[in-house]
Length: 226
Image 1 (cartoon, one colour):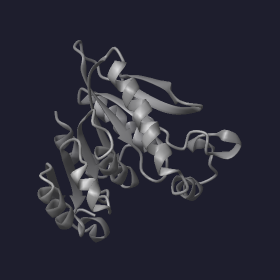
Image 2 (cartoon, rainbow, N blue to C red):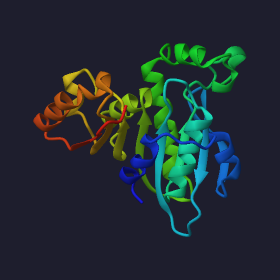
Image 3 (cartoon, rainbow, N blue to C red):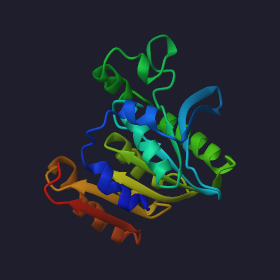
Image 4 (cartoon, rainbow, N blue to C red):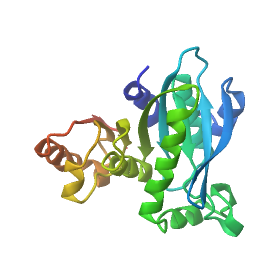
């Protein structure tokens, strides 16, 4: 099952509580620490139940931080046969140096997300990707996927990291700088809702910019989806 097919499930609303889904999962979950310089990034990892080494996916959370829902999507990716790594990009940014769960509300976490240094976010993702390439269960091929704010970061990361196999952008905006399209290092696949005009209105321009830069971009728009 490819990530493209998995998009059909993740774009639809789930009626199962994410925490309950995680608790019922038969797959191995663990927390690891990816480090770069003096910084430590907390990361949730899920392993598929397979014998062979498989590709890995770095999953970038939305603007609410690393929630149970994002962790449950990582579990779904592992169910589809990938090693899934979901970093908490709010690591150390919470009260008393806490992580996503330390914020008093989703609004407080969102405010902190938009205060993050973009260069730090890229460095955090680089550290997680480096771990994904050497974890024993991985075959060294790593893609990135992200939702909303994370989708925009996944698109941006495709212009930054040459070791990526692919980028999967779920209702995230494209880079604003024209130079970013020429810098794309891997194919980009986009998944959008037809009724999400705020984001989907920019797909046509992004497709044109990627084509002009001779880069691979395959957007899929789901009719009637928000």
